[in-house]
Image (cartoon, rainbow, N blue to C red):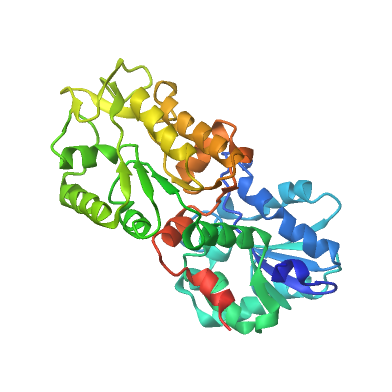
Length: 399
């Protein structure tokens, strides 16, 4: 049983780091509350125990101190809707007189939302004095913000030292993220297939290198596939290519061969005469795309081949789309991958989807509940895949 689940928070003030960095429209209305909903089970457990919840978060990127549009007060109303029956309080700063007073006088079952941590430059600087001031608000520290675990900020990496080991822990969301990543990376059942997509090889070099020690198969799609095609002497027309990464692509292919890891590149592509939703389309071998045309999705043969590889897998990691799935003409490849991952999962495979675009794709195509785990982590999950130590995890885990 997890440390968080087995803890009793009765009468405790629980200072909880969340990731409420949600998008707002120009009327200050939330357009996607996924990140808020993800941490509600953690908050509800504390409240159910008779605890008091104090929430702190980043919001947007204010440049010079407080800005109205980056105030967390815009989220207080919706937080109340997500926690019916809870009394939501708001402090106009994350430290200082009002915050301390409100925290001190809280009743069990109440939730105090603190103002944006980023209104203080000390937060991103990882300032120890600022972290100590924050720590005074709570009896227990809970980090439930996996999306910021890769940042060495005061509220994620420094604050934990001001709580003894019994009173610092991960929340349910953070536990889920860490456990799923650990399962894929350190306890994977073979065959282990990693599906890596997106635009640029440069963004994924470290991930691919790290995966060469873990995976049996690596599927490469999206714009980055054409850099690999060109590196092997293929003609890619006007497709996306990082010419300064051709040597790296060749080196990765060589390392994979030496490690016995099968790299799967798309045999064919859906090609377009321009980058637009109304483009003229055709298909071509991925290594023989005519001049003036560009690959914007994997083709029928590639979909079939990739699906076969995925279906025989026992562990699956998916990071990045196969094409420009935001445009209807170029979404078949990404949708086929989502279907294959869902089917493999149904047949007993463990599947982790991480990284903004692939998460958006499984949401868009309705497969969120058909894979094992969908990470909210974004950059944090990428850095974990790259084999890096995440400061927000290390701080809570340290004895």
